[in-house]
Length: 264
Image 1 (cartoon, rainbow, N blue to C red):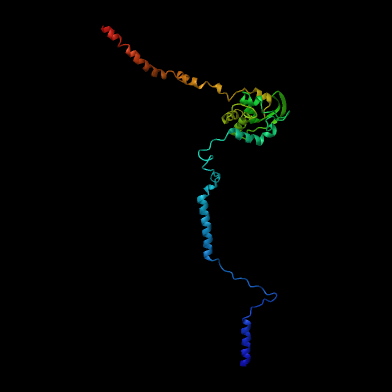
Image 2 (image 1 turned 90 degrees about the horizontal axis):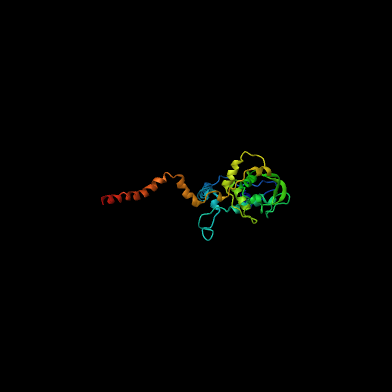
């Protein structure tokens, strides 16, 4: 019995040392599952906290002025930025919307859209009529540079601000050989307020009935050299006393003169 027992024990020991072989259809045991280690949770939390603190400190509010970095040296650095050139702004706006009808050359389309180059409407003294046309639009026949045109121009008052419309008109009045004074945003604002209740496009006869005003005419106001003398004259009474004391010493110097004569 002892010999057989020892034989079975030996076989059991020999079998325990051999790797187990998975039989067909036998499930693979799943790896053990356990909770996430606390140190890993702490590490992830610290990373999220650090990232939030970094963005809060250095994001600059995600402002375009922060990320659109300009060099602080060389020709582009230094002083404060000046206001954009109205002609540059006007050309960009013109190219985006007006070039289809009036063309990049400013010559328009024969019979349909009038030219802007050399146009008496663009360069004339009735700048209030010009601004009114751009604000409210124009439809029907019109004669420009001696040639007839018949089409429609939409109103631009709802799409552009006063400064944008002024920039467009300033560019149009200074390109293609045109040389006329610029249009300002205040001029556009004035005409916009004057015709704020009008809803329809203009016709050319209606435009011509608008009393012409040259809003860019600097000669309409008195010269600067004449305004200063006129100002004291208009308020003549207050400055008069100040002029009299200057004459009083001469008046007072005369009475002492006769007194010595009387003494003689």
